[in-house]
Every structure is written in structure tokens, then in C-alpha cells.
Amino acid sequence: EKCTRAISVCRPPGHHASAGAADGFCYFNNVALAACHALHSKRARRIVILDWDVHHGNGTQDIFYDNEHVLFISLHRFEVALDHQFYPGTGRPSEVGSTRAKGMNLNVAWTEEGMGDEEHAAALSELILPIMSAFHPDLFLISAGFDAAEGDPVGDCSLTPRGYYAMTRAMLKTIGHDVPVLAVLEGGYNLKIISECMHAVALAFLDEPFEPALRDLIRAESLPREVLEELFGPTDEDEDDAAAYDKLPKTTEQVERRQTMVRRGTTFGRQELLGFWKHPHRGDLDIEPRGRNVTAKRDLKLSAIRDINESMRYLRNCPFWRDMWSMNIVDLHDIPEVTTYSGDVTDGGDDGERNSERDVAAVQDMFGGMKI
Image (cartoon, rainbow, N blue to C red; front, side, top):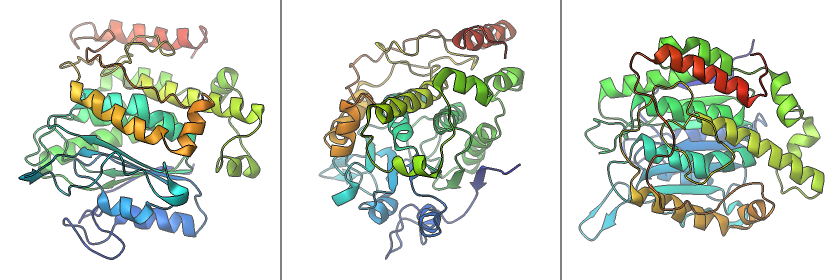
């Protein structure tokens, strides 16, 4: 069986290097080289690059800023003051791409330090997962820096290995099993933290649970193709169908198919994040968090909601995403400024077995009582 997921533990990192210059400890932009090779060799036609390093991937953005075949997404700290800026000082939400690629560059720029699992889960659930699904990539690359992790001496953020695991699972569920995925190591300044976080990503790539006790639940969630097709219709597509995703849908049938595809991807992806974030007014995902034994550590930072909303506003002003929004393919409405976590969580105590049973029941209930 062909492997579709891989991890590259490479040094030095690469996301600050542009086509003509080294920068920020980076000499060659490893992820950009992989994407360019895939496009040039026609192994891919639509590529998503997600950069979760705490520093903006300025080199990657520069390389693909006018390339409509690459959707570049970056989550990073962005603080600029008269006497201080967070390196490299780029990555404004207003930087959305140019010419034909307007809307193919998304910057979620955190204006405060301390952003953690909750804030990143909200950004993925409300903005990143829907547009990833709508873009319909045939290759997914992750610039996997771990300097936003709790305890990193440079990033001053608070992502945990469990958070990286949940984010990775959410994105894998959103794009589906058949899309090749490559995670490439970027920044990080604490070897122990890097290893723990990359281990969490590897577990997600292998469809292994974060906790061994939840192994059976993870297997239950690996739903067979026939179940997905019963819920959302056929998922196979021929070469002509694949090419159709390069442009906006025109017929009613095409619009409805794209709506179904995006709903399928984002629904499965958002479930992985429910332990950290659930939209306070969302009705399409009205089930409990499933078996992560996650306790929400704190309320969401209000500044994070505002940062996500600002990025969303710039994106929906781009013709491509404005049309997608008007067709009800992606939901790009502002998030209400409500920071309290909305959803039940478990404490990870002696109820682990009962929680797992409840979660399997929740999965079965979601699929009409079907035996999994």
C-alpha cells in the first residue's frame, strides 16, 4: 500500500529563505522547493502550505505570492511597535496575494504573546479548515516549526503536544486520506519540546491515539469509504473533475457538490478540535467532544478572536473567496466576540473507559446508529 504521509526532520530550517536570499538561519526553502518540484513535475496542481511556526514564513510567502496554484497559510506572532517588532516583522493580514493569486495568501497574525491550543483551534475551525477544504488540494505541506510550543524560550506561546496532535488530526480529516501530506521541521529552540511535539504529529500521521487507552476509538473513527459515500455522496473523481476545482463552480450541480465536499471535510476536521474550541453559535456540529480527555485550560483570548476576524475580512474581500462565500460554499462570517469555551470536557480521571464508550456511541449516533 502506498504511503501518503511523511515527515522530514531536516536542518537547517527553510521558511525564511526566499528565491534569492538566505534569512533567519534558513539557506534553502525546503517546503517551497518541494512544492515547486511537485508543480513542475505535474504531480500536483493545487498545493496547500500551512506554516504554524511562531515566526512568519516570509520566504515562502514571497516565493508563492503571485502563484494561484499554492494556498499559503501562516499562523504567527505579529507585533510591530516603534521600539520593537517580532521577527521578521512581516505577515500582515492585508497581505493576501497579488494578481491572479489574490486570496491565495492567508496570514493569521497574533498581536499578543501566549497564544495556545484554544486560539489555534479556533483559527483552524473557523477559517483555515473551511478554505482548505474548498481549495481541494492534491498535496498538503506543513512547515512544522515548534517554537510556538509552551516552554520554548523564544516564542512565548503555549501550544502543547496535545494541541499539535489535534491540529494535525483536524487537517488530515479535512483533506481526506488520499491527499499526500509532508511535515517538514522548521524552527524551535528547545530539543525536548521539539521532540515531544513532533512525536505528537507522528502519532496523528499514523492514526495512533495520543493516549494508548483510546486506541479502539481512533480505529472506530477511521470510517470506511462506503459510510462516507452514504452520508455525502461518491468521493471518487476523474481527471476532468479534478481540473474543475481549479476554478469557481458554475452550474447548480457543481455548487451543490462543492458545498457537500466542504461540509464533509470541515465537519470531520472540526470534531478533532472540540476539546479546545466550539463556535458558540454553530449548529452544524452539535455533538460532544469525543474521547480526548481534554480539559480547556482557560478562556480564549479576546485578541485572538479579533485577529482571526481581521484575517477573515481581508480574505472575503478577495474575489475568489467572496464568490465562494456568496455561494454558501465557505462560511466567512465574523466570529462573535465570545471567549468562553462552549462544550463539555472531561477531566481525564477514572472515567476514561466510560468516556471512550460514550464517544464511540457518539460516533455511531452521528452516522445513524450504523455499526462501526
